[in-house]
Image (spheres, rainbow, N blue to C red):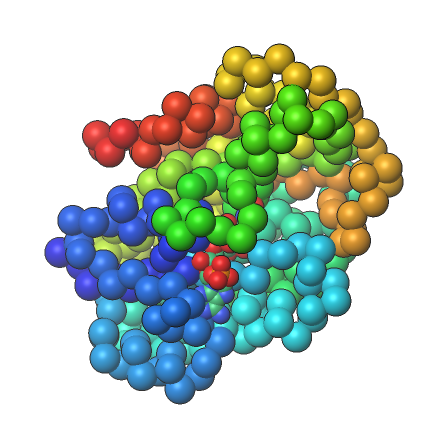
Length: 297
Ligand SMILES: NC(=O)c1ccc[n+]([C@@H]2O[C@H](COP(=O)([O-])OP(=O)(O)OC[C@H]3O[C@@H](n4cnc5c(N)ncnc54)[C@H](OP(=O)(O)O)[C@@H]3O)[C@@H](O)[C@H]2O)c1
């Protein structure tokens, strides 16, 4: 059994990580138990728990809100991971942190690899990129996992539903208008958690530096938000009108990359399996499955 600490444990990803690691009886904390932006509280909790592995799924994820709440975005996405990475290093722990496809500008049409230069368009992406750099500086024993368009069911109902649940809930009650000129790689929290746990537990056994650093992990394939919504409705058996619109017509406050598909070059180089196609992941999510590969479903 490994001594594991999970932060943001009742969010979409944190919930899946906690369930998948249940046999290790992880300490799973969310905002009520530990505000990860509070330096004294972070040092106190990590000093008490003395984890071997820290998984940080806490983040400030309001992409549009970040444009005006810049201090909060950088506190949650840059300062907090730095505090956690530093405290993890003091315990000799592996620090696993998550970042985003929104660190990329999105002005090309080929998947971004881990070596490609980030250039975020908005505050959210900038704060997550700052977090990546601060984590790398604070604790050499880290994994930085960039992911994208995450859907999952949080243990504590989140303030915002997943995109898929929102589409399914709204369909029929009003005409759906969904952006069709942003291409992403949707990611089921369960598949992301499974790959994260595989990487972290492999590192625990091998302590190999090959398993550290930056990884891109999403479901395989890509689609626009419109295509994702259409697939979710089709698999739910809902026959509702849905209209593709442009980013400009939608008029969100924050700029977003038009193309942010991630290439999984590190996973490939390590000879690890890629994640299933996003369409399969959407189906499993809608059927209420809880995970694959290890009988958790
Ligand atoms: N969701 C996406 O589409 C997406 C895309 C790319 C990357 N990511 C990254 O993937 C990771 C997991 O995202 P997710 O979708 O699972 O997020 P989520 O569902 O929003 O969960 C985040 C959790 O962290 C908590 N939290 C926020 N600030 C905190 C603080 N200061 N102290 C303690 N807890 C705090 C949140 O609590 P409250 O609800 O009270 O705030 C929430 O329970 C994050 O690093 C995120 O940036 C997500």
